[in-house]
Length: 98
Ligand SMILES: [Zn+2]
Image 1 (tube, rainbow, N blue to C red):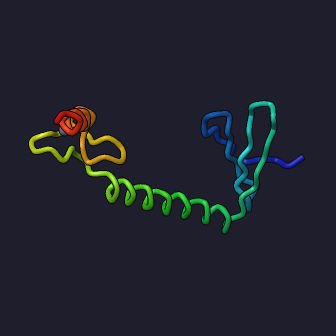
Image 2 (cartoon, rainbow, N blue to C red):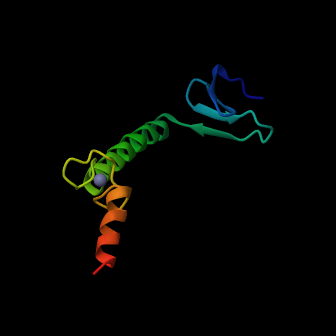
């Protein structure tokens, strides 16, 4: 049986520990799943998280403006729309009417 040092609870039934080389992630939920991350793999995971943050931040700023496109409206726009929910409904209504 492997001994795990520096064990710490991360949350959500996940524990982290260190065997001198690998960082281990183990579950304490009865399934007893374990994964060993060697240093290069752990670094890749950390870099993945950094890339993910960059991509998601870029997507958010590219695709979604922070405010409704209507003048003097400071509401958040709907996803995939330049307008907030209220203004989108208003514009839809005005297009329907002759
Ligand atoms: Zn609006």
